[in-house]
Length: 84
Image 1 (cartoon, one colour):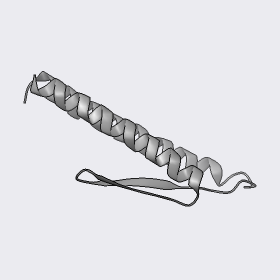
Image 2 (image 1 turned 135 degrees about the horizontal axis):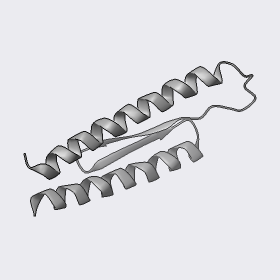
Image 3 (image 1 turned 135 degrees about the vertical axis):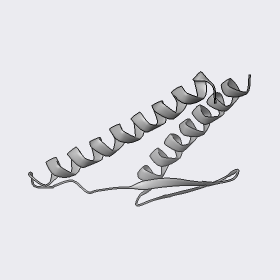
């Protein structure tokens, strides 16, 4: 694995850690105040070339689909950079 591969692995670990910390702090802070807003959620499951988008509302599913497309584009760029 070259330098680019190591950097990608370190970047992936850092992004995962930041995401975990954001979720942890968000969960801790949301318990202190009363909730008046509805909670929505969604996700994208990519099996081969077929994306499966789900969400609790149309808005959440759309946001999940956009994030999924961005992640696929970033993955494709990194794949092309590492093969050159």
